[in-house]
Length: 145
Image (cartoon, rainbow, N blue to C red; front, side, top):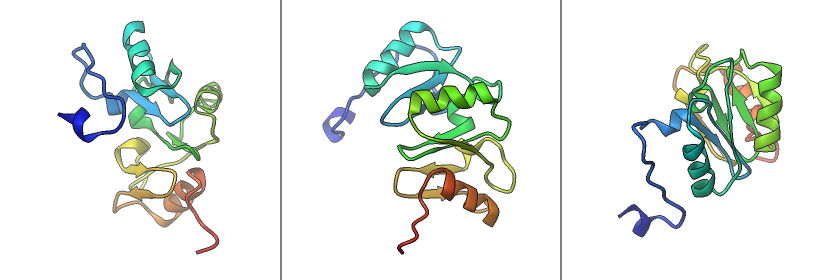
């Protein structure tokens, strides 16, 4: 049913894991996935998404999709991102990585922010300084407007 309405790849994961949005950080250039996922699952994700998928973590935690938001223009990640994690994200996703929070200090930016390469929508409690960081990190601020 989904395949009839969606012009893209669709995969059915043969695993008990269900919250893939929390376990996968992806853009059109690459994917960083929860380090606890098995090799076969990582390969299937890579095949379905059409990008290289690499296991990793953010701030020492495995649920990378909750800890960051990625677009083709940038990444906003948990403020406790380690330098080696930053390098992995930049290498795999091929964009700059910045750190920040949403909703008045929440470090799990994936829980309060949705973005693509053109815009970002943040939770209602997100402060002005947080919006400034989000806009710059994801390169969605336009000077010509």
